[in-house]
Every structure is written in structure tokens, then in C-alpha cells.
Image (cartoon, rainbow, N blue to C red; front, top):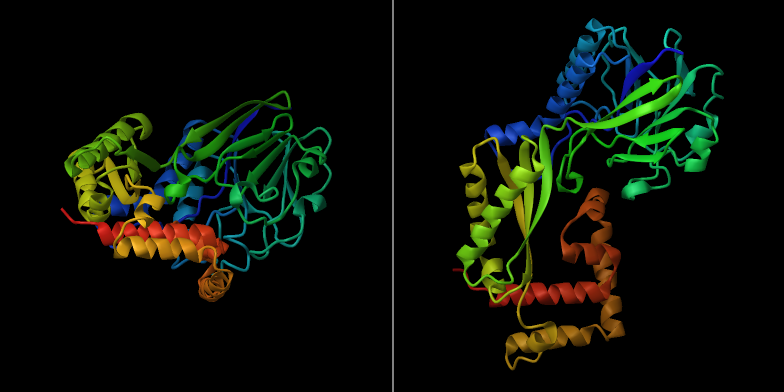
Length: 424
């Protein structure tokens, strides 16, 4: 069996709309919007430079139906680069680019093979001694275990299973094409090239069961290095597997404690220091897209709440002062608390204390809670599923979960912060 190298990528989501860019213009915003294309361009370039033998995409090449043909034309252009270098590519469609989701079609270069959505299909590379088995999604919601229908391994070949699956709901991902690790290990393949989970993970070795993660982080919950796996096979076994970061923009969640701050300017200085530190430690020369979370119990709590917009402008100014292509601040999240705890606030002999006291008593009123959760439940059920699943607002999260204790506590803290805040 010939020694060879291949690339295993997944979840590229070409031209996916990125969150956090509403109202943002300019060079940095455009760089973030085109980051998925830039990452894919880099990956193809590395494939050519490293002279890999073939290229595997395990689902979600696209993010859904194309807005226009430019998405497909970009992909074909990249495949043309591989074709010129003599590198074949094998593409499997996942839930985001299922057959039913992509209505536009373009003729692909001859070096690109797409796994059938009707039944499992096998592609052979006899010169390398490789067989690739896979089945694309016919529609988004695949609820059956596709892996059970994959063919038996071909004796004497290096067998690769290509599958888009959450493997039981890993990482909170929708459990499409559900299966278990034991299902995959029992198949007898040498390597499982998985997609759908956006965090890189090697779940087993010999046989290798691998998620490469997505190619480019698209929002703050996809922070850290993103890329693809470069796999080396020698004497019929995986000799080396390296995860290579190719992301064009690196997301980072930065926390800043303001417990010891006496002035609002101290908070702004800490934000500046956090951005500078992350650029040096985490960006690896890429544009750093960051969210700043201000934490800690502080006498400045009310001022910080009232001055969030000003602090965001200060943070963005700090990022711009490092150079336009160095850092960008998506938002600031305030998670500070007042020096007084909830009991002390409720004991205040004024209207605010009475309000918090009434809220704390409401937590023990069964009739009130039933009415509250009923009305809020009606409201949250009318929200789009994406908002319910992905909201980062603590009050809305508690409402969606029907957690009355968390809802009342969070509303109380938020109300007190807003009513006692004084802008500086």
C-alpha cells in the first residue's frame, strides 16, 4: 500500500452570514464577512504546497441555498486550483447543504466527486489503495443512523468513512444522522472523517474517529483556532494527524475583573490591556474579533451599566489604535454586581427596596408563578427556534427554560442596576 497524505475538512459554511456585524462597515467588517472564503483559500493553498493526495469535505461546505451563483463559482475556482495540481476532492453534503437545500447547481470540475444522497457510495483510489465510503444528506433533518448502511470495508485498502453526524448530540449540536462511537468502530474502517461538530476532536485512534471542527469561527461561541486535519498514512495506518489552523479571523472571549477599580477610566484601561494581551497571546497574526465581558462585585456597577456604550467606544478605539487589521470588538457584556447583595438591596427603605422585596416574595407565590410562566411561555414559543436556542440574554434564557427562580432573580438585578445607574 502506498504512503500518502490527505486533508480532512468539514463545516466550511461558505458565505455564512456572520453575527455581530449589524451596522458595521469598513475594511475590518468586510474582512470578517469574507473570512470563510479566505480560510478555504488558505487551506487549498496548503493542500497544493504540501502535495496531498486527496481532499475530503465531510459536510456543510455551504451554509444553505446560495444567494447568487458567486458562492458556487468561488468553490469551483478553488477546485480548479486543486485540479491543476492533480488533487481529487470528495464532497459530502450535510444538513446545511443537503440536496433539498441547494436549489442552484453548477457543473463541477472532473476532480470533484460528490457522495450520493440516495444511498451509500464508494469511491476508490486504486493507485493509493484507498476506498472512501459516504452518503450525503437528502434533506436537512436526517434522523436515521446512516452509518449502519455503509458498506463493509474493502480488504487490502485503506477504508475511510465520511459521515456528517453529531454522534449523539456532541457539543449541543442537533443530533442529525445519529450514531454511536461503537457503531463506527464496529464498521472496521481505518479512518472516520466526520463533520457537523464545530470543535476539533479525536475520539479514537486506530481506527481514528475525527472531527476537524469548522474551518472559520463565525461568532463568539466558535472561539479559538479553527482549521482542518492533515493526515499522513504509512504502511496502511495513520502515522500522523495534525490540526492546522487556517482561520482568517480568530474569535476570543475576554474577561475583565473590575473589583479593584475606583474610577470608570480604570475600567477602560483594563479593557485596553485585555485586548492588547489577547492580540499578543491568541491572535497568531490574525485579526482578533473579541467580546469583552466585565465581571466582579464593584462600587462602579451602576456606572458601568449606564456607561456601556461609552466603554464599548473606548474598547473599539483601543483596538483601532493597534492598527486597523489587528483587533475588532464585537460587543461588551456587563456581568458585574453591586457591592450590596440582593438581601441588602431588598432591605432598603425606599421604593427600590420595596420593589425587590416584592419580587423576592413573588418567588413563593404559586398562582403568580403559574400565570407568569404561562404568559411568558406563550411569548417564547412564538419566537424563532434560532433565537430560543442561541440567545445570550440571561433574562430570555431563563424565560425559554421556564426557570422562574432564575427569571425573577435576573430581572431583579437588572432592574436595580438600571434604576440606580448614573451615567458619568
